[in-house]
Length: 436
Length: 159
Image 1 (tube, rainbow over the protein chains, first blue to last red):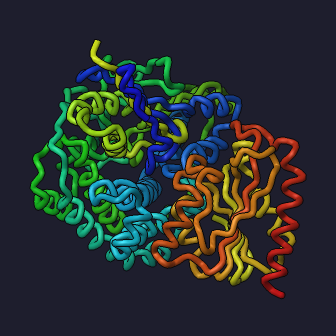
Image 2 (image 1 turned 135 degrees about the vertical axis):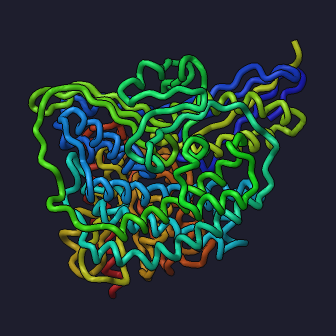
């Protein structure tokens, strides 16, 4: 839609496809200058925070698993670790391994979905994964089989892959027999080869030359690639315990979005696979390091479009880590460590597929939640997405409105925004105003 | 995902989020059907399954999906759409509520040539999908209707 006579042009695209959830983007351009970029998010987990108040701690893992159909394990893991800190419990050994394993399953399935069906179509010139599947059925079949390998882990450990039910404070309601885990080894061995092929496939895409200056934020653990434990670190040098998160990371209300914007000491920052990989390169497996080196991308990665490479490397890592954990698995003596309920406040941060997910709970002496706070990764990336769009938009201004809008969508999709954690649908609007 | 009953060529799959008021209608339908359908069909609760629907549909000759819908009619209105040969409207089953939506998952299965021969989608127009809310009043009657129609549909398949 164009209204050149008034020097104002507005483009409205009904939906930004292939973004999980609901939201809207409004861009205002005056002459050649980008005036404003507003990513609107409609439905934050704030509603869940209120919903959790008054619930028994034991109900929380089941409730938070329903915030997002894509990353239920992340929500469960941040919740159980926060409660365990309140109750003075540290889950070790095989139970700790099983938690890493189920998280591997979620990364594999979430990343495979994004790489193959949500983002690859952007690089190969398709309007959707459906259109791509018609021309590349073998590729999409490989992606779906990889995803299924992740689902299988979640189903075995979580009881089911959608809304897993067996994760609980202290451990699991049921743990697998060794032979059950071993039954997944053949498929995971296939998945390892498929993941290598995935990295090589995506590394061959054409990437726009775009390298913003990011402040990467992720967990970092001294011994391993992070899932559930570690300090919160930033490439700017920040290194804090999770308990200090809210002292450094602050949320702001903005008028155009019901989701809060999170900044680190007042500035945007990046969470997710790209940031996580940049900050944890030394903990990749030898194979993953080699395959990444073969991609010949500059490290640390600075191009958001390289996120698809980071995500693919993490699929490979998660598959290899799954095989390692399965190999050494001996069932724990009990499926869950006993809990001694005590009042207190506990925080936890874990690495959701899309980046760090922070939870804080306050419980009373009966184990009833008095306060809950959830900071999802998409809220944390929201400022960063807006900043990227401000930087990327000048090169789009000569394009017809529709193409410019599609290019904005492609930038947004680099972040794999799970807006359903925070919202639903993304409507896109670019408003062009004439020079002042 | 919960399944019951023996493998059958008819598979009934309910979708939704049972913490969100009327969005639970698909799940409640299959829970009701599980008690009455016997061995005439396999029943699956699939929560917020998106692209995983492809896997859940595989191998069945007839699939009946039930999900919350938003098509602009009065709450409790029932839609019956045949996805077997052509695309169903993404506007009625928006992609929002279950990540990749029902219509997209079906189209992906069709593109990959793994769509079952018959795929029928029942949608129930939702009223209130606020977190923690009970079913809104029109849903009770709609639930009875949709259960009855699906049982008839299964009987017709077996006839």
